Image (cartoon, one colour):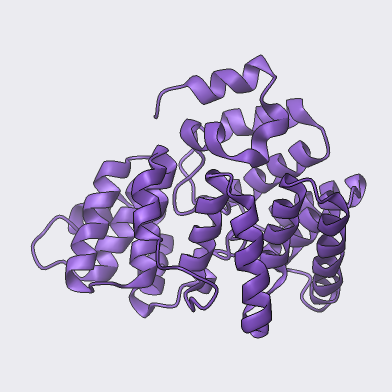
Length: 301
């Protein structure tokens, strides 16, 4: 998360060359890439196969298997920040925030790994530690201005919204939109930019624009070619529907996503899980609905 919500695909923002190679192998084999998963079981497997197989198991919500493979990759390349962040994301998907927090304890505003920093933001949001998320993001903007982009501004806007700073959230969302609009005009066929713009508009209360942009982002991802990625954009659509008050449609989308293996734009490489639905404040507007409560109670697939 991908430029993830994290909103950037881990495929485009991975810094470690072997992690990028793993994603390319996965894309070539196609989900669930069982050949890759089998290949990783042999002794001396290269780290790109281990990480690719771990991502496969993550998309299938087989998190214990994914964790074992990330550990094997870390044996080959100890202390790699992307690998540690990906391992933390598995614990987050299981709802084990204590273990994920241990792995992310050293991530701060100076962290250069996009994956690690984004996973730390997820951790703070899942812990509902919004004040620390705001402090971290503002410190990053002050110390490393070039590292801050629209995706981090959207994170900041949500955190401000969660602490009741509605005015501040709108100012930040407006800054994100002002950054994204010219980029979307210059590069009209990039779904990540379109979906980030949709989120900014949703935070600004621009309902129609947000829905139109989110649906356009989904259409820009060919379902046959990128089957493991397209549901991630549908997940963002569910978030936008939640923000603008279309709760029934959001719950319908989430119901289908819980049955689907995919690479999440919010939680990637793990998809959404009942534990994440229970923990994440982005879904709070849905909590009083019995249909959503049922999704949160379902056992891990």
